[in-house]
Length: 482
Image 1 (tube, rainbow, N blue to C red):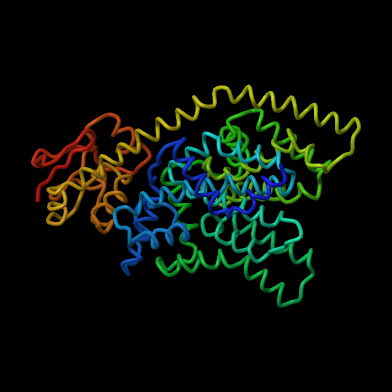
Image 2: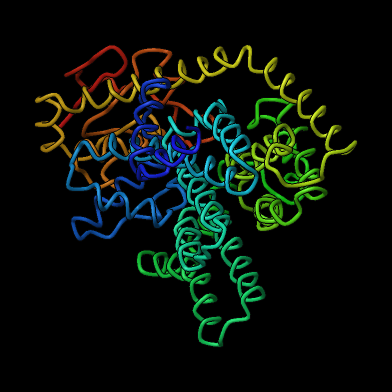
């Protein structure tokens, strides 16, 4: 009976399970919103869809990620709904990450580990927060874990598909380049292929960095624009960087992402147990863990920003190894019955109890993430509602420059009004004289969107006396002097 159920589950296409998981995640965690970086991808994709070069060098614009911009191009025909579908696509990526976690864990270490791995991943508060923020780090993790699941399938080597998945990941984050290069070297060493086949593997690994540089060259004239621009932005916003910061911050970042000391220590213990008892099976996920941690160090050496979400993938790998520490003995592999196996079972039971105790207040922690999301989503919705009013649309078409409190509001307004981003300006860099002005009306709007102490400024934000109020809602007001 059990085998029949398992076989029935396997016959259902993966896309169906991912769609069902997407619906469940949306039901449990609610709708998200499009964050600053993702909104720029939507705007840039819309520009390209209308045969207009994207302004990648705009002041305080984030690093352009070619695959995210390509998604913006694909979604551009949806018009003003493109941002909502982008956010939904990231939720689907979270579902795909959970599904890939189940497959990778099951194929490497057995069904119990796969189920535990997927459950741990889908309940991490920071992962939920990144999903609801429409962060590109979520689809990046889904693609890499998907590649791990493909490679872990016994008797069906598919290196081309692995490199395709890692190549797509490499169009979202440069750590994908390191993973693809290491995989190509490993595949060549394992298969000892012909020269033609080896060159094809090397070419597949090099495709993502070459495509990214071509993208930058085409639209900025600098093939390393993403590197140079991100370095400059990190310095401008005083973001943490440097080798010393990377080494010091990594443990704290991982602890925060895992949201559980049991997962952190269980993950470390699981990696050690895997090397001892399941060496061949543990090698691939351990390589992903080590290489992505190394990638974080490389970011520090390169004076690039060191944000918490850049360690999301190593945190996911530690979740896998925590599941191995707790339940890997059920896989049928590893040491035979005896004292070592009994010690593993006892240690796994202790870890499961520790994880269960730590999960007692998990709903409250996830609820905190949801509350922040609701506030920001409502602020964004109210901004879009104000911009969509008939008088606002008439004025934005007639008036010239639109002024906003800071750069956070530029991409959503540009998308909502179909404007070029250079026609929307921070009122803290240029004093409003004529045009439109958006102003926050509540402390919540000021904290949630309008003001950021790290942004460059020349003037304090104020509504000029000669600007006339024309529209307002609960969080935003629109003024004009045209």
